[in-house]
Length: 522
Image (cartoon, rainbow, N blue to C red; front, side, top):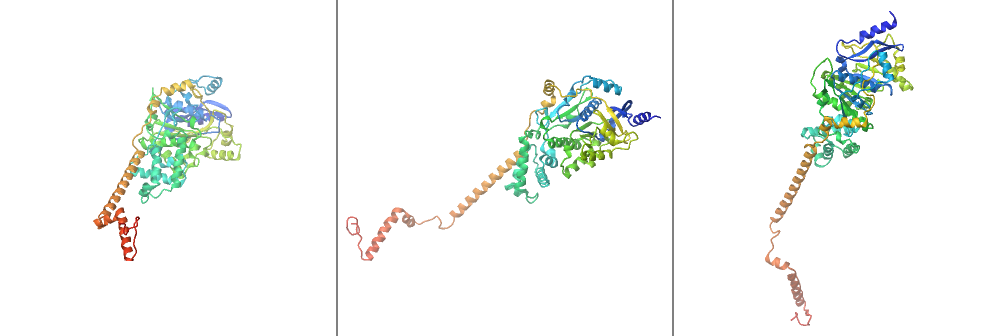
């Protein structure tokens, strides 16, 4: 048997699921594309998570696009991060060009342009339907990540959330959080929590407040509050096709920690609210997290543990998660080990760090009878990838260099007119446009502070009144005899002086003259 025939047989054996699947492309050996060596990914195994990696410009975004298209066709909703705003073209059918025609010929598959149902969301509310979450839904760990707090400050944040929870004070928006931080770090609030929760220093509270204000100044305060996003909206279908939900972050690209953490908060909510379903024939939702390295960069141990727990357990809820990043080394080993489906685009080895990353990547792949993994990874062209996935028995498939099938929708952003029409016609845009302001920690604390102030003022007045009554009731304090009252008068004191002076004058034998010269003024 020739090497090519053996290759085709191995690929067919590894990538021929019995149930529904995603067609990824066809195997490549020695530069030749073998269309019969189809590379497929079983829908049943897409809740085992995955990784899409590769250097800039190698086609990762288009791989996300083709996966989203076929998932939508299969009735599986998709949630994706649109970093550059160029995935909105999913809504419109693509067009044929010479490159597409050549790819279709190599794969021996007809190219059928198609558009897909699309909802576009935004954290700022400027480039799509406003996507919000309450501060309480974020929780202290994720919020500390967003605010870039150190361990001490993160501990204080945990105390604030515990106090709010114990006192039934919902933390809805940033105003609630700022009010809590201020109240618990000074005055009556500081005294209230000292014995049960500990003290919050003014320097720590000041730092937290400044970082909250910085978020507001960047125009992103609107992502915290009500109406909170309902994750059930991610599970919608239209005419049997799964909705593709895009979180457009083109206007907040300079806030990677914020949007990547927001994605994790959605995952955490899915994990906490979705029922256990076990293994399904196809997932209920597939989550794609682009620029995943930003999620893990400078993360605390508690944050990483939370990610690891969610990824490990959420598959039983029927949710698949795919991370998209430049190198597998961007993902912690504890998480990487749970990503069974791998689509690796070309890696470059221009620097010692690149070479080290390449070596580590090679070590994560099964041994191949057909490739030297390190060489094939640096030789892949645009639209090609080295693939290994889990078959229906959960066993890694044969490694295959693959020519990927092209997306069938537009591989560019929608025009301004089409984009505006899509947004304005969106039910989700209308649903989340207006904010709600329910009673929450801000109002409850304001009332509490006012009541405390009023109570303190009443106590003060009562003490003053009591002091005055005590003083009034003291014997002889305010009661003067008639003689004392008369003698106390000004004119009486003056006459008294004259009489005394006259009497003493008489006693000393002196005569006091009046102004007219007579004795005693007579």
